[in-house]
Amino acid sequence: MKIGILCAGDEELSPFLPLIKDRKTAEKAMLKFYIGQINSIEVIALFSGVCKVNAAIGTQILIDVFGADMIINSGTAGGMVSDLEIFDTVISTEVCYHDVAQNILTEFHPWMKTIFFPADPKLIILSKNAVDKIRPAGKVVWGRMATGESFITDEGRQKINQEFAPLTVDMETASIAHVCYVNRIPFISIRCITDTAKHSGINNFDENCAKASAIAKDITVALLTEIKNSHCE
Image 1 (cartoon, one colour):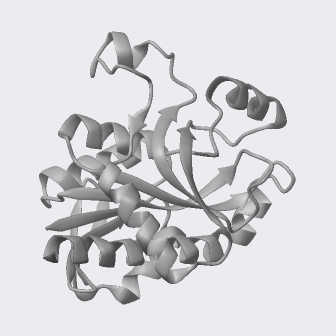
Image 2: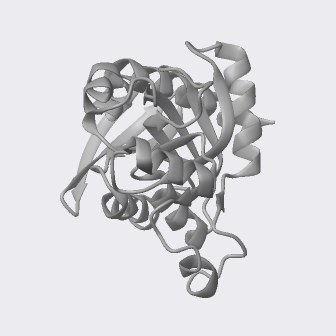
């Protein structure tokens, strides 16, 4: 079993690097991949760079070149609902694009039944077990994420909430889920909140990114343990 861990930025990946034992590196498509073990589980970790295409490139390489059997997206996001605070965490149940015409994925490839890419049901269950055991900082909820390539203004926030009702927004998750969907690879995303409607903007993201990334890392590593244990049963 090989698990790909994809982060968007270097600060989101950074907490994982000291944990990767027997670490080796490889480069492909101008990306650096870190290969080794976390808690005796084979992992391939990287930061893909921000935006949908970069994340999709990294995901496909994890699958094709490194043989990843499942993908975990770990990192940060903006909160979209009033009861989510900074350093709360959202774990995906389904993911959509908020900046793609809604018929693109249903009437054309990959001919989906809905606009939502589902997270893997088993990984959702295992993530709940993981959270119960470590009780991370902030609360953890499960739900819908939305992806698009822009920081969200107040006007944009209202439109996205009306059309998609996501808990979070980011710039990569749906594209990672999209690649996993067409490759039939299990996927889940773990995103810790750096900014909200009350505390919005790039300054809040920059200030909170390191702590939020560490929280997402803790949950991801706990999930890796649950995955390992489930395969040993």
